[in-house]
Length: 127
Image (cartoon, rainbow, N blue to C red):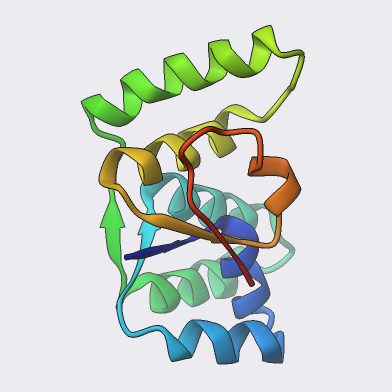
């Protein structure tokens, strides 16, 4: 199973042709609740919050949304500590996305392969 990273969702919403083609070629995709939150943040921060929020609502409708569960929360704590000990700084929301993928055993589709590469066990798929 595959999860779209926030960057992929944004590229899709902007109509980037190669991303749209790839996303539409995968039959069952998931989003994390963290990505949904980031998309709504972007919508409400934009110059056209009502229109953009409606676009996000329409976009997320066909997806199953993965919540941050207890297993993901535990993984978040471990991943954040591990990354900090290694001197790597990854944003908390990105660590939550990664830990959610790990908790559910899903592969993350992202344009940020190098960003996530240091997270042990996380399966990545390029856009």
